[in-house]
Length: 188
Image (tube, rainbow, N blue to C red; front, side, top):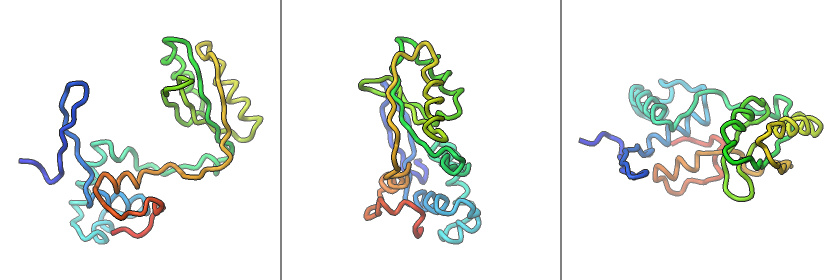
């Protein structure tokens, strides 16, 4: 018997696996906790009109499946004094990805790194206190012998902040959800 949650069979490199789909209640729970991270499970259950145990079980399942990666607060580097955001594309020597990744992980101002296609190998999002500090960070980036070349772009402003709530709405099949209303509007 299939559980309450829809299961989808997907194929990945010849292997079948089951993955849960975010349903409407999951979406409502996620929107509520995103908008109001301090709301307790009991209060969430009251607002959503479901049992406390249901909310807790859904949160536990979403965390276990990796949908919820963290309950940690969302931090703003600019508010901590890192007002400059830049993106650096790194070209690295063949076979150097592991050592370069280790090198980049040791630099606190490297916020994230992605392997990419196109005219580079890695894309790094970095922050700095000002342009002089950015030069120091870039110098640190390229100090690894496996980094062949770098190109850096400075972000002037953020037009769309990192967000996932529109994906939650799409995954749950909700229609008519305003993708711009991703800042904690009414839940329900």
